[in-house]
Amino acid sequence: MDDDALPLDADAAFAPLERELKRLMAGLRRARGHGNQYSRGLTMAQYQFVEALIDADEPIAVGALAEHAGLTRPSATTTARALEEGGIVERSGDPRDARVVRLALTAEGRRQASERRAEQHEWRRQIASAVGLADLAPGARVLAAISDQIEAYVAAQAGSDGVEHALDDDC
Image 1: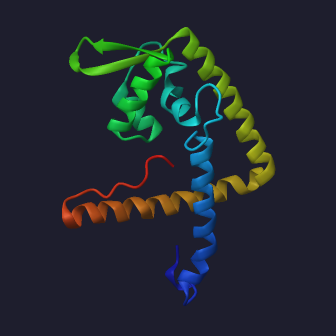
Image 2 (image 1 turned 90 degrees about the vertical axis):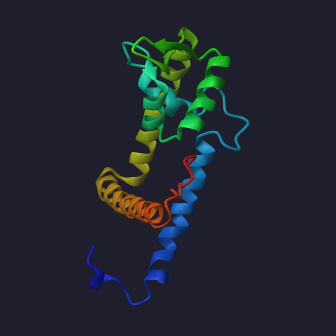
């Protein structure tokens, strides 16, 4: 972005974007099931965690699933336990590394994940229709630029005091 293109009062210019980003993040939290005790089947957060398992030929390490879903390892461990208790996934060890836990979907887990995948595809089609296909790519570029700046800020903060200042991974 060209700094010369920013108005003198960048805070005022940024305020509407910041307000809409907050609305987006709050909406995503609600959609992921946080604060929504009425969600049926897998919550969006749980779906994002197990999504990679739908097409997997073999169990996947919890750490890889965490990275895919944007969760911290402790959150992934908690999610994995809850999904196992709910009969959605089954655990197995890694023959190459005893510290690694791998997960696979159960038959019920595959059914619920496939159902949620179909819902997600329909939701994306609705969003694309409402926003307009032509606006999706420019919107993605703006969000990518904002994400890059947030990541740079977090990295700079981690470097300044030796402690990583994690942003809310529940968004």
